[in-house]
Amino acid sequence: MIPIDDEILNQYIDGELEPSKLNEVMEQLKSSEADRKRLNYLQIVHRELGKIKSSETSSGFTELVMSKLEKKFKVRKEDKFFILSISSIFLILCLGIIIYLFINIISDPAISSSVLQKVDFYIAYFTKFNEDIKEILSPKNISIAGSIISFGLLTLIYFIYEEHKFGKRKLGNN
Amino acid sequence: MKNLSDLEIIDSVKRGNHSDYSLLVNRYKNKAFSLLVRMLKNQMEAEEVLQDCFVKAYNSLNNFKQQSKFSTWFYRIVYNTALTRLSIKKRQVENEMASIDDLYFLESDYNPEATEQKDTSKFVQTMIEKLPANYAAVVNMFYLDEMSCEEISEAMQTSVSNVKVMLHRSRNLLRDILVKNNYAEEIL
Image (cartoon, rainbow over all chains, first blue to last red; front, side):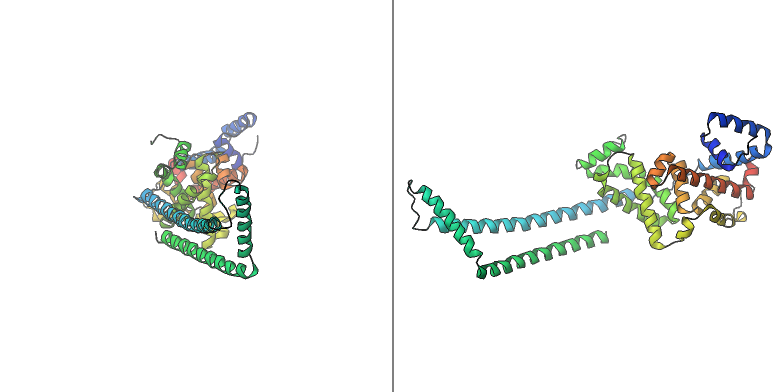
């Protein structure tokens, strides 16, 4: 005879008892009316729990979730578009500066277009470019350039922040 | 489309067919809703949290490594979100994680005279909704979602033995209440 506690009864219901123990428990259940009753009660609970129904969400729940997600995609797309347009402007500006420097170098009378002077041309080109860069990076200009870049960056950050805030608010409202 | 497996739907969503996500929403909304209702004890709040869970799951789809079932992964999100909501609200947190001795407060919580007919199924349903969040979650996942103890332990990020203990305790408790209110005698 083994004492049958609730744990063993639960394991019996779940079919988790090892064969040797299962036989012992079955013998015990045959001989003990009280244990059988306890098992029956537990089996009732097990059976009734198996009948529990799922609750249902309100109608239109799926559409609500999908519209929430749809709005999120839209905000993301807008964000992407905004970053892309700012980057494009920045790239165009950089390209403009490079073209401007290039034209300056080309139009310099000191640089001849003869074939023999082609090597000189490239050397002169890079030397001039180097000098221009040096000039731009001179202590006087660097502060101006720094200010302009800082201003540009601050403006960019401000717009990104505003856009992000707007996107968040938009999501929140939905 | 409705016969697609969860993984096929996820692949489709990842390929850019965002609208296919609605198939997953339709597939899991009611079961996850039942879990949330039983944990949060509030239908409106449960629906609100469930919306967040689906959005969270969508945003994290790339993190789903397909090592477990989508349902297990999704239930983990649902369970954790519900726990976070409960802790934010500080709603009887101590009771929710209480020991089994504390669960017996339920016995006095049910008034059999309030029910005209002795409907055992209804009674059990009512009592599950009164179980603490983690116990209700285990019962819901085991019986309604037919998840194994291993899957439940993965969803709840706890040990399998802990899940079994919670399941057995819930059963024992419900049995004791059933017996106390003479429901079991009638069925027998």
